[in-house]
Amino acid sequence: MVTAVQRQDTLPREVWVLVAANFVIAVGFGLVAPALPSFARSFDVSVTAASIVVSAFAMARLLFAPASGRLVTRLGERRVYLAGLLIVAVTTGACAFAGEYWHLVALRALAGTGSTMFTVSGLALLIHLTPAPLRGRASGLWGTSFLLGNVAGPLVGGGLIAISLRAPFLVYAVSLVVAVAIVWLFLRRSTLITPVGENKLPVFPLRAALRVSGYRAALASNFVNGWAVFGVRMSLVPLFVTEVLRREDAFAGTALAVFAAGNVVMLLVSGRLSDRWGRKPLVLAGLLVSAGATVGVGYTETVTPFLVMTAVAGLGTGMFTPPQQAAVADVIGVNSRGGPMLATYQMVADVGAILGPFAAGMLADRLSFGMAFLVTGGLAVVAAMVWLPAKETLTQDHAAPPAGSDGANGVTAGTSDTASSRTVR
Image 1 (tube, rainbow, N blue to C red):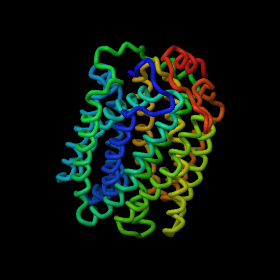
Image 2 (image 1 turned 135 degrees about the horizontal axis):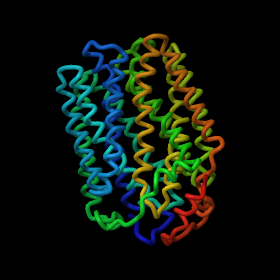
Image 3 (image 1 turned 120 degrees about the vertical axis):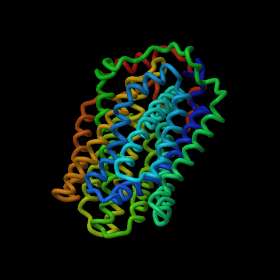
């Protein structure tokens, strides 16, 4: 996947292309997020039913993830990435013309199949194109691009909602077509991406990966990330804004943007620090900060404390996301393909995104919004307990050089990366 000799002090151009495309995708995602629950509610359904629209997308991602891994092996990362984006573009645009609630659920489920295609292939490309000492930095940039898009998206989306609840879906479809154009134009002649049929790297067995404590811990924290960020926050925060804070629908976009802004502040910092200090300390701190702030959100009654808690929750999430992704990359190494591992890593987040809106929606309906956010914060504490005994995945050989040092000029792709990562338990 990567050339035999590659500089370790700079990121390849292809990584920056993926980062740019991720930003465009996120802008569109941010447009739709504040509109989706309210659009579902416009069909005169309950809070739980509105949350199921979010769960349907995640359920499709979960079920199609193994097939996406096989498609990547047969067709190559680049083709699967572009095809996935196009599928999401078409189905999202069609949501704008949904005439009944079940139309919206079906279209979001179809969009989920395309989403898992470009997520698995995009992560595979990012991991194998990034030199080992820069994995935290690359993960931070990847996450930052998505969150910057989520800062811009909801702000624009809030204005679009004022025009029509259907408008954000059309704009999202257009933004995805732009992302396809970016990736196709700049990666079509890349020399770092091995043509289909020529990649002879062995696949890292999932069974072996599950024996690595750092990988198991990353699965636990990614489950919480799916439950809290892609599930509960996307489905309940817009409803919390309208039904508890008594603000207009458009304010939900501002709330999601505040969370995303807190993420952006922390993502690059935590990614770089994890390349020097290790993955575990940043993940533990981030999970605990996120847990406390998430619980706090559910018990706010006015706008100012709600926004403060939302921003702190964003900081906590930004603290643990890049290190946990870098930990997965550490385990895979440069001389293995991690299709099954990446699919499983994605799937646990999707399970969280499926269960989160459903469970939290029921808690909000039958008990209170506060209880829904309390359970979500408690899960982050459980994930921190899983990380506590886990072994560090960042080895000394692959740690980033201290600030001000020259670093390595190059590295020969040998067996050390994969071997060292497999011995961590």
